[in-house]
Image 1: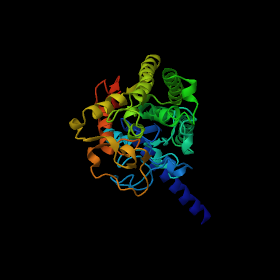
Image 2 (image 1 turned 90 degrees about the vertical axis):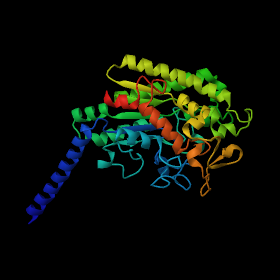
Image 3 (image 1 turned 180 degrees about the vertical axis):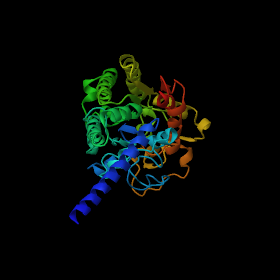
Length: 366
């Protein structure tokens, strides 16, 4: 009797293993089997729900236009990665910190992004805990250890080489570091050009770490026009109705350095493809030509308090604006779902002005 039970248990275990291997084989046959997402709240899907932080979005009205409700996405609806996944035919991956993100749930990748995080470890500490970029890379290593239990080295290598890493970071190195001189010393220690170079150099090391772990396709987003977000407009230092040009010039140093770094990475690693996404160009186009994209509110948030509804970001149970589809910014810091969709579409399909040297659709075919 004991032997029969043991045989039945062994058969069940074998069946489970075969089902898992079948799923892995299916995933590896896909052109883009998985997305691995690194960065900040622009691509977070709920990691901060599990951290001791005030940088959270797991309450109403966040997710008011999302089927799953308030999941931790800093949006009224879908995130950038949700749209990219839909357009490439890959499910949007689950948050790393969720205890259920194991087994078959990680076969299409994992999202490590964390609101308030930055390239530098200290950025965003004013919000509490967060997964910094360096910590996110460590978390990726822990995911790789899970894959190694179900894939042989050759299969894992192919899986990673065909997958795409999405990196959207650097925003908090300005918003929650360089632009808060009362809490951070960075603006005293570096001028804007030096600080941009510091960030690019650190991000370059982080990108190379991902490459050394097997990632061969990296989509790296630049920083958008931060001087135009409601929170920065609300400071009131720019002329009425204008963005704060000084802040936009600051992030310009980072963006120029990042694009140059991407060109160098492509020269140094012909076995890989690194893409620079020109976030500043795309969001700048939306802000300069809102009617072209059916927007009519560009200078204030849909949900928030104070000047430009941007002095305090979206509060629990706050009633947001009704014209969300026509509003570029959802809260004090983040674009609305409609604006995110435009950026996602251009990241996947756009010309070299939007994504250099190729777009995501072209990257998937390489």
